[in-house]
Amino acid sequence: MSENQVLIRYVIKRLSSGKSTFLNAACLTDVKVSELPFTTIDANKGVAYAKIKCVCKEFKVNDNPKNSICINGNRFVPLNLLDVAGLVPDAHKGKGLGNKFLNDLSRADVLLHIVDSTGSLDKSGNRIAPGSNDPYEDILFLEEELDYWIKDIMEREDWGKLVRTSGDKKKILEELHNRLSGLKITRQNIATALKNSNLEDKSPSEWTEEDKLYFSKVIRGISKPILVIANKIDKEISKNNIKIVEKKYKGPIIPCSALAEYYLRRLSEKKIIEYIPGDSDFKILKKEKLNQKEQNTLLKIREEILDIYKGIGVQESLNYAVFNIANLIAVYPVSDVTNLSDKDNNILPDVFLVEKGTKLIDFTREKIHSDLAEHFIHGIDARTNRRLGRDYELQHNDIIKIVTAK
Ligand SMILES: Nc1nc2c(ncn2[C@@H]2O[C@H](COP(=O)(O)OP(=O)(O)OP(=O)(O)O)[C@@H](O)[C@H]2O)c(=O)[nH]1
Ligand SMILES: [Mg+2]
Image 1 (cartoon, rainbow, N blue to C red):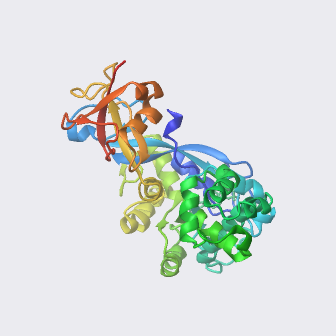
Image 2 (cartoon, helix red, strand yellow):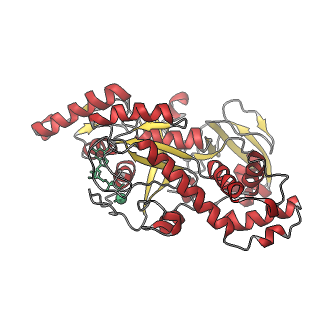
Image 3 (cartoon, helix red, strand yellow):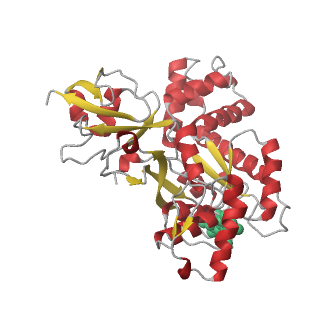
């Protein structure tokens, strides 16, 4: 599986909200899960998948995927997922596993914030009466911790250096980039954040504490977008809680039951049921292998989750993060546009996720080989046989051959 498929690295917070269970469900890992807070200390890695309709159906071919998996016409493209330690208030000041947790987020492209939607955990992960904690507070709490974390990093180096730029916009941008590039924040992110926070024309010598915090908030929104996952929807109380949160929170929220997904995926792995992640139902294949309790659990998952939400929420979350937040598209490179194959006759072997707007030449350099980019002549669109120039903007589901002078 190629590392460059990676995309998202993830995240999460809130003790015992189900972060590790989510990772296990999405990646079929065996990370320790427990009711006790601080179960996870060192971040756990896993490989999850974005699910797309594979182009093999459109072309009526049997594919031989190499860097991804195809199940019944669904292509699963790998993503890196990181499950991190829970966060407690004032983490940015080092409380709990604070800075460690926060540093684990540095390389993330998207944060999945797994919220306990039963509202039965307080801010430090202690069990309280269901419904006592407002999940909306959790959302604000994580955002605020991240804002302060970014502000602290920005201020770690002497602010005087910024003041001495004497308002030279280029120098300000460079100096801020030096401070923030470790968080995968680009110059473009900084330029946009300066503009959106109305600080473009204000000299750093005049930035107030509020300005610094506001800038951190804006840049956090751009560089570490958050998808809220309302977990534990298998619990009755969650349904009402989610409705309340949806009224207050304007960002995306996906209802989810990591536990139910894990249950279905494990049974599917043993071929006792047929369940494709993200589907709205499953089929029991070997009823004789299920005792009455297991049959009841399956029935409950169907009636109380799938029939209502049309999915369990794990695959939906990954797809939303990849396609709606990270704005990626899928592109299939091939060597032969007639057979849609590589040199070894593997049909539709690879699919890569790239940012919308990516040009063919950049795709060639970053995903195929820098050598081929140097000898690039043109591309060919396998659907139309049309020639494509180096600046062609790739489209979702493009199947492309790269023609080079080599
Ligand atoms: N009912 C229900 N319970 C869940 C779900 N997901 C996780 N749990 C339970 O919640 C508890 C905590 O789960 P973990 O996955 O360990 O939570 P965590 O967020 O990784 O916790 P820390 O690592 O301690 O921060 C366990 O008892 C899980 O079985 C879910 O979707 N539904
Ligand atoms: Mg955990």
